[in-house]
Image (tube, rainbow, N blue to C red; front, side, top):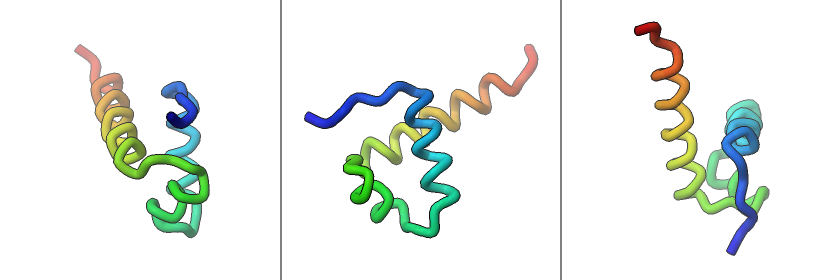
Length: 56
């Protein structure tokens, strides 16, 4: 089983991936991340950001 990351750590990893010249798969391999988990977390955190951006 791999290392468990907090949402804050995932956010930093996603930002690093986006600013990297590597493909997402290459970034995941380099950082020993499961690509499926990476994509799922990216979607989850993106949805959380959008929902927090609206005023009710």
